[in-house]
Amino acid sequence: MRHPPGDGPRSGGRAAERAFPLRQFILKTHSRCNLACTYCYLYAGPDHGWRDRPRAASDAVTRKAAERIAEHAAAHGLRDVAVVLHGGEPLLNGAEALAADVALIRQTVPADCTVHASVQTNGTLLTRERIRVLRDARIQIGVSLDGGLAAHNGARVDHAGRPSWPAASAGVRLLAGTAPEAYAGLLCVADLRHDPVEVYESLLAFRPPRMDLLLPHGNWTAPPPGLPAPPDDPAPYGRWLTAVFDRWWDADRRETRIRLFEECVALLLGVGSGIERLGLQPFTAVVVETDGSIEQVDALKSAYDGAAATGLDVFRHSFDDALAHPGIAARQAGLAALAAGCRSCSLVTVCGGGHYAHRYRAATGFRNPSVYCADLTHLIRHIAARLTRTAASTVTSAAGSTAGSGTAVGPTRRAS
Picture 1 (cartoon, rainbow, N blue to C red):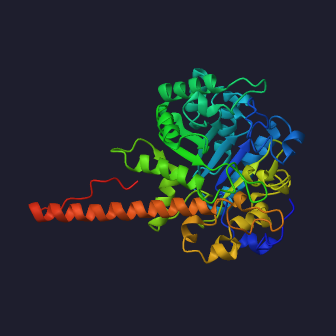
Picture 2: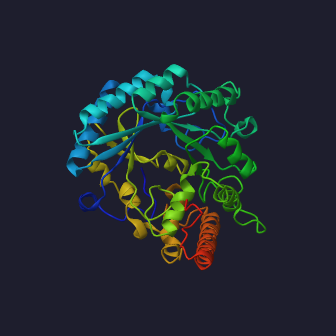
Picture 3: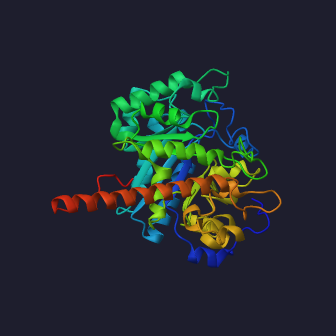
């Protein structure tokens, strides 16, 4: 990976000594996909590394990755790690192979380390038997959709241009109906062409226990759809997300959990965040490709060819070696890795500069504000205002109840 000017705040040996251990290991079990989504940053973007990699990870790669995870967990005394089976489409490998991979990792890590396993799929290959195999292997199943209607998923087509919606929607319904305990939730990318509340409510029909809303990957050099924004609508993605937030927040019961919103609320209340898109917490995820290469997360591949590469692999290098890589070190540097304007911003502890990949500009690298700066500002200030109003109304309600009955009444409004 080449490092644009201003990146890599720490150097090798000392960086590894001060680094936070890796806790999420994303294993590319298959490097190809049975879909050809028209917006896919991985296969239709600037990075072409996938073309030269094996379609599936070999037994040797999986075994060595398991040993490296175990080595890292033992060296840092980790009591739990997350293993995410990813692609491409991981189910192209077969559910039995995925279950065997997870079993091997669990057998290899220290006895006091718990492995939380999950798979992220497009849902089209989910069958009753595959769901059973994954559930029995204690693998949580997350599904990516662009919304809960066929019209929302027009870009998600197979290699012949046929819509994936019939198979994907059937797969999610089967998952929700037969193995709710293995249903991790839904992942959806915001699309300005679609009504945000309609998207949210249509996804609720699939009974997701949780939902995650993502911004499309883009940056200053290759902006996402709708940006740069027109002067009369400076934060279109912020507006899209706040519409969903208000619908979610104002519901009379918690219909599902939305990770982006819950993390934003937590940060506003002074609690740490567990996602890379918000906050200043160190990033602790790493990817193992099908050939054993150790890489940074795929989102960086939306910036330029080779952006996620480290030059490391599981056969010759440990995950501690990965921690010393300047690209990974930059993700753990917190405030020091941000642009000057971000460091002085009043929202920095919540925003955290936004997603690292969204800060890229060809001339200056990643030390820039997010291309979504206006949108994140809009969203965070909106949620902060809603929190303030909710707190004020709760206090007023409690005071009124106390005055009227002499008995203190707790808040009737949920906090998340």
